[in-house]
Amino acid sequence: MFVMNSCVTIGFHDYAEINYELAAEFIKQIKEDTIVVTINTYKEKEDILQGAIRNGSRNVAINREQLKKLQFQRDSEMKNLIDAFEEHFTFAEVLYMPDSLVNSYERGEDGLFFLNREGQLDPSISYNNRAPVKIIQIDDISWNVVIKNTILPNPFPNNYGYKNGLAMFFGLAPHKKITQDAAKTFQLRFDKYHKSPDSRLYY
Image (cartoon, rainbow, N blue to C red; front, side, top):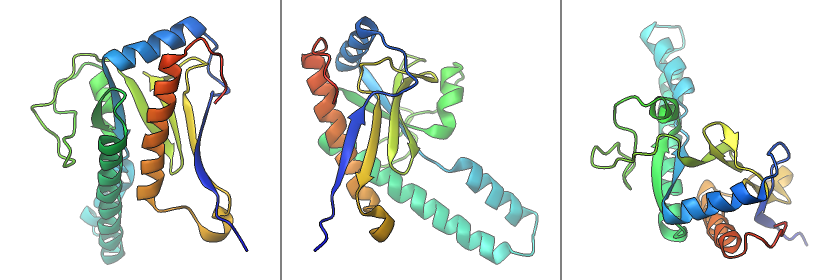
């Protein structure tokens, strides 16, 4: 009998600097303020498909179908991620930003940048910090906690990964479950580190 073991793990990133004092300051800052969760938009893939459709390539019908599937995937994943953090993450206020807008925001440009719970850019949502701490998704199963393009220093719990012991046989768990487990783990580990930043624990 096979037992499917899956979990979200948390640890320290190999390439992050070690700075206990600064790591403790960051967890306190997040607790008292806000963290930004970025949403994958697949903007580059969408632009390529839309360009191919506009150019009237031989595979217009195929490209339209791929675009439709990509947009459905993006919208579904966006809903899953927002729902997961709204339900399971209470450590700090959360704002949601499309990954395609992060650079413009951090350059100080004007515009709409934040999504409401329905996944729509909302002019009523603003934030003055142009260098926020962000949770960014690296791929389907891993996240880093960064400020600008720099991973927060160890021992801040800055690197997360979803592990499914039998993924090679059965594939990944549903995206909804992955994001729910991730949000729960962010909540648990942030809270634990905030309560005991001097514990030097490896999670």
